[in-house]
Image (cartoon, rainbow, N blue to C red; front, side, top):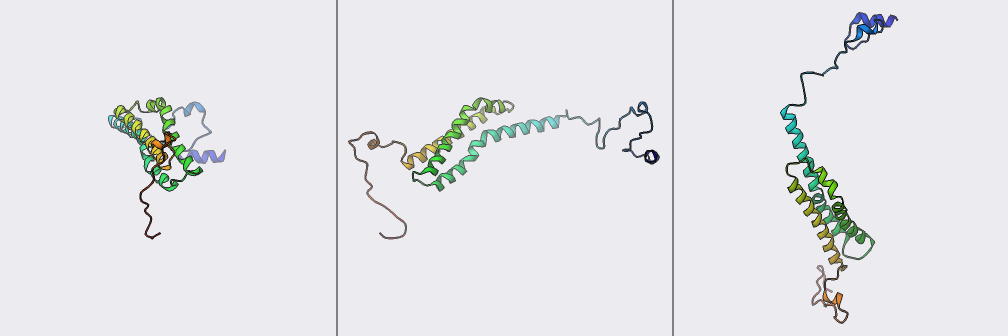
Length: 171
């Protein structure tokens, strides 16, 4: 009880007096930095919130397009040989945009708050199509797509190359 009286004598704002009855302690002091006059309903805060929503919606819409340079680099590093690593890379490059198309409804719900929802939806859709086109191009360069007539008709011979070029060495 001696400590409580010492706190009472110091009269600090943050000290609690445990000696007085609870009826006298009805007034609760606001924490430091709190102001009742300051409200978050002013116009500048609402503008800032709408800008943040638009920025977040653009981040969602540009997400697949931001992956494109990394996919280009990974496809370059994977090479044109048919082995497990390039096949898995191409498979994931095809699967990610298809998965995005399957979850299109939930993605569009996230974009509803933006004033530019139609442009953002178009950008999202086209960037996913671009990802699929890159994967199909990689399949074509690996020789996995039947694009030549000799792939379809058994009596046609594959085209032979007229020239071969190599690095800086003579063969």
